[in-house]
Image (spheres, rainbow, N blue to C red):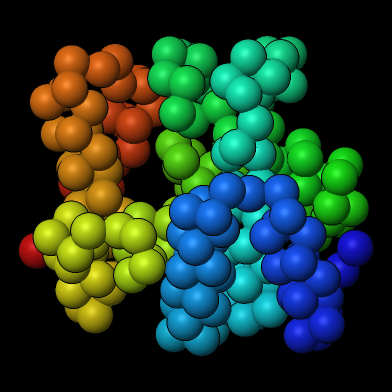
Length: 197
């Protein structure tokens, strides 16, 4: 399925509304709207961004055991990616978007795959979906999201916003005594090295 117009977007919305919990659907709509706004700001395709925003959590409401079963044999799992169940839905979401929703656009599929952990050498589009998930206004607390939103207004805003998001994630995981994926720390260090404040 290619996402070319509003009709395609509405079909996705309708299917997702039936698949997700009410609170997850509300978040999904917020991410889609935010992704579209960021796509406009950073010269990416708006329909593609809205579709990726809608689909980013398409696997979120599945049981953790089912998600682990879907992803356990994936060749692109990061070292330590299975240490936190909260991230299982991203790689599983890519598979579900492809198989169940018939998405063929690699940009959408990749952005779904990496919207929780991120990866080295992310495209602007992947960063947009990653950040839209963190800063949408319908369910995300403003005290956490506002510094990220402000960074997006600065020069090199996407990377600065990514850095703040990783910093928040690492702090939150450490505060809750949860394990941190090695890739998360690497990406934080990489961004910190390459951003001039």
